[in-house]
Length: 147
Image 1 (cartoon, rainbow, N blue to C red):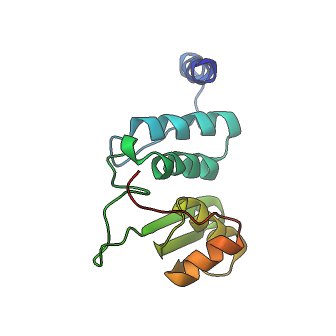
Image 2: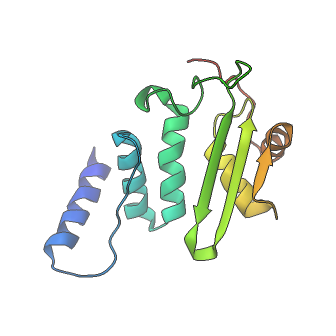
């Protein structure tokens, strides 16, 4: 698409210009190429590393078929057979973090983790507390069963 071509062209121009300094890089533990590309495009457009991480992770949460069904709805169930989600986000410049564990019926766990970081004094919310917080923040309740 045009936006992706533009982002790649900007990246190549920066590299070829001989400029030294900061330029974006996205690293992923797994081979989730689409998520990495989305994160890279986001950081190029916004210069916001936190938004880039959240956008890449959100892609996997909403499209688990592109991320090995190991992330997001339809992922592996917990010890009692229920799909619950966990997420953690850290932001270096402010030395802050937010996390959720055993989040039920909310697809965007990384978004809820970010909300924990930005809107509470907590670092981690778990179980029903995490789900209730997500609903209070406007996240929608939905099934996490297989797509």
